[in-house]
Image (tube, rainbow, N blue to C red; front, side, top):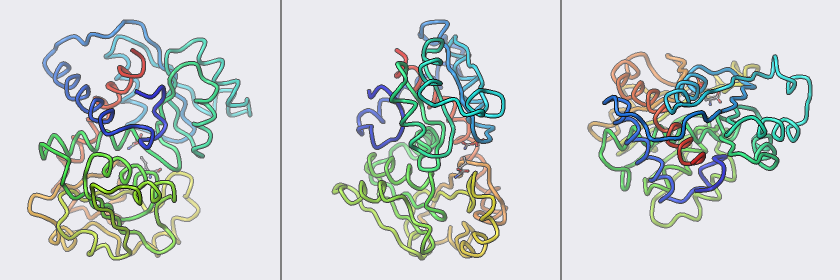
Length: 303
Ligand code: CP
Ligand code: NVA
């Protein structure tokens, strides 16, 4: 295992598979009241420079269930918000805690934190990647479909942190990945460069959502304006009209096609109320699996 979880690009297929297997085991243990075998008293610093519901709660509950303790820091009340350098924050937190999770803006902030930290750093979302979410997505798809390899994963919408991590994670696990984004809103070049190197799975990037959805086994979408893009929300609403996961689009997918959404969702924009309601069980399984997938990451990085 790499020391940190900054992006799935740093992980091999076998390593991702190991995380998913440990996550399944931890989920089984938790559901059946079987104690986890993990050293007690580990501590996790959780830095949030952006809002969160799922990431905050699943990490804090997760470390608690593992017999440890989570410490919440926000930029509003920590010295980070007053400009203390990342390098000094990393070197301080690493003296108290066994692991650091951070949700922030630029991906380079997470890289800098990891550079200076003696303890593992977990990316809880940056503008470029959301690896913890995609581990939960892969876990959920595997749970529902019993496999990942050979399935077609289709992403509709903004070429954002979710799109980038899904391209990398899906292709690494042998899934065919099709992405539909409006012109000018495509995925990050780093994810596209990786996709270009993959030979054992198909990748396509198109502008037509219908073309991308044909034969899909799972359709995934995300908000049109991510955190930090609030000022662009109106312009994006116009640019993304037509990039909605609705019944018409679902009709092009394979029978039994799943829907995943990292949440929060803007129903009526990227997904209709009807599609969300029809796939709510899968979507909230996905939210639940954040807990199990992240516990697996913490176990593997802190052991
Ligand atoms: N999906 C996700 O990361 O949710 P939060 O923003 O609520 O953490
Ligand atoms: N793309 C979204 C994901 C939220 C979990 C954002 O970055 O705001």
